[in-house]
Image 1 (tube, rainbow over the protein chains, first blue to last red):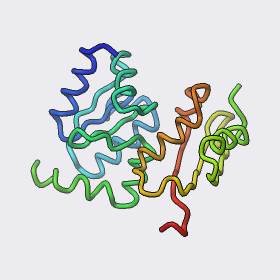
Image 2: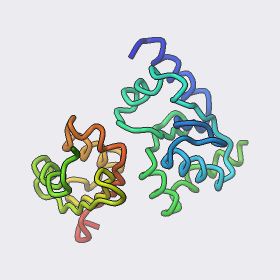
Image 3: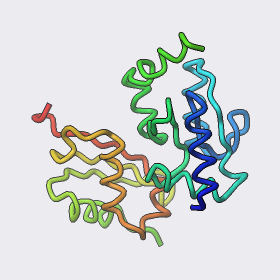
Image 4: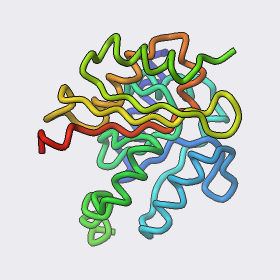
Length: 108
Length: 79
């Protein structure tokens, strides 16, 4: 992964409270797993920055190296990698995602 | 040709010997659903647990990982 892509990713992740690297966009997701995570975030009514990795293959591969996580989607909250579809779904069902996002809602 | 569920389970046990692994296919022959229970997950974040499983699957599973629904947990008695 080139330095510039790493810096781009780092900059996006650090300058937004909630960032979802996904295939497609929240309105037009191109993959079931990406669609589910963006729907979960919408259910929590939390604004988030969405990065469509299908538009840039360097970002699509770079994000996997950045987090040492082999798949897309990837959710970041306060610059921390939270997980992919499985983990975000599990956290959502266990109420842990609500806890994680609650402080951001007050700030917003 | 994607590996059989049994082969996937064996791969996990080779790296995580005490793992209780349930693997089954859903929709087609390359969408896996997997549950891995192991005492070695105790005190480890979910992300690290999943990374351990992905590492156990190795490179040839890179493609299959995309269609893998994974759930990791620790044995009941460890809670």
